[in-house]
Image 1: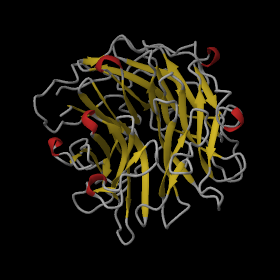
Image 2: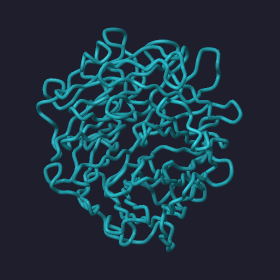
Image 3: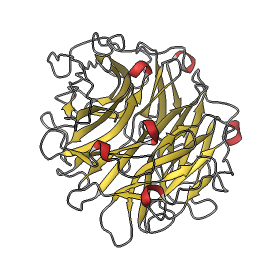
Image 4: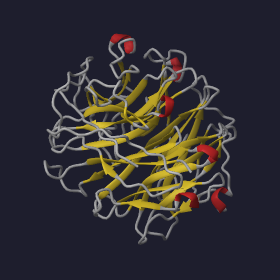
Length: 479
């Protein structure tokens, strides 16, 4: 398989600018060839990771990958020109034969750079940039920004690009974006943080976020519904506000919630979730369902949400793959009491009833455990992606958190939840051929090919001109 090379261009960025930057010079100050990305292969061969040349002098990360039309892929993330410079949002489009040069504002690159600045929301874990694609082929990107009136506060923004990668000024009342203020900064300093993005069959948009509830001080699960033209839906959610909040646990002592994945179902309902620390000694998964009106669907597990102890010490759900429209398969991690490392954990949940498949992957408690580590170290699964034939791609990392020995990993589960040997079982990657703080975060299947994206981090060291986060891709055919 040959490589995708992106030439990324950045102009000065302003947080609330509604225009796209003009083309300039590459961040690396060099010319990069753009050969075809993928050559089809008759049998599976472990792919070779390759660096995407976004920025040599500053950090760059690809957070999200989504399938586009006609076998294409969209990539979303941020890039900075200097170690501490503004993190400009970018969206790139590629096909199976190389970058789609009809897309973007950087000539012949397939890259659109937004005059929008990503602002990390604080707290543990990576704050995410996510993508979604509407039926028209227009692409949406969600991320966290500084509040317009208080730079120490955070809001959530969704931007839409046209099919050619231009800012779509028919969206958001002419600005091309909508900014959602879920909650004001309070004594608990809980900030709005963008986490996930989904689109339903009618092109309505749902953004999942960390927020503070209207009546509480702890972090809650929050969802906003946005109409296809970029306004809050005024007939959905809490008091028809276009917003929904879920506190965990319900009716008990408030506890911190960590929202992650969100998916839209064909009937206009959505499933979202993450985890909370309200029960047990550690985090436990929360999976909830909202009906088409933005209310909890009480037929789902009897309450509208699943929140229970799965593994005795910790269980986290990061993202969901929708399988055949009837189930979601989770990707996350956790461990039993007395075990000091985290393993990858997957569950299969019926979207109608909210019940877990208690035999998933040969388990007896509905939790498929996959130890992807070569040396009994902790591992973190970050995403789950549906593949043809009911299979599920899990991606993430293994190794001590934020340490040099952390590798990128992918595993495919078959339709029964067992590790699929057609993909050689567990696949670990050192993204530059040596030890590094490696992460896989986004992936998609399109046109019979799989693309996985992530980055090599600095292993806890400060970003510098010579050592900074660098983006990597792997691509390979579906088996």
